[in-house]
Length: 186
Image (cartoon, rainbow, N blue to C red):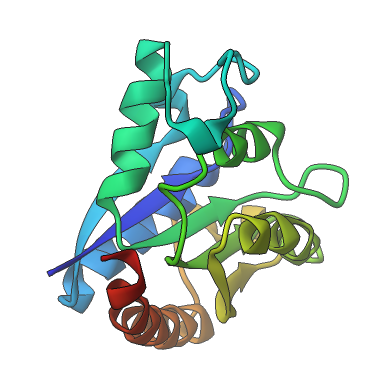
């Protein structure tokens, strides 16, 4: 079974990313075509890139990098649960992406974005060039959650029907790409 890492990209105290992420993670598990894994950047506590060697060398010196590299390497596909910070991605996400290189190669990625009126979509678009540089395939299909605060009820995220449908379509497409790219990773 394909492994999907659902990566919570915000590390800010008080974030709603884990709330939105919980909804999507459960939906991905129910989808049934992925071994979905919860990956929260908070749990890795990655400092600003501190490895003495370029990530392409995979000569990791620090335990946090080795743990992160193993998590990234084990996945066949990724969904990044992302907010928008000043029209762009979180610094924690960019840092995490840049920590490793080969581990990302030839794998598809999709997004569940959230925020204000734009629903985090500017963050997604700003992140895609980094993904392609890492030889990843960012998908067009995504889930956007504009005005996320309006969908929070008693500490839980309440998805709209269009978001549920978008998530399923995204997972279906993510599976196609993960299968198609798998021979390139062999």
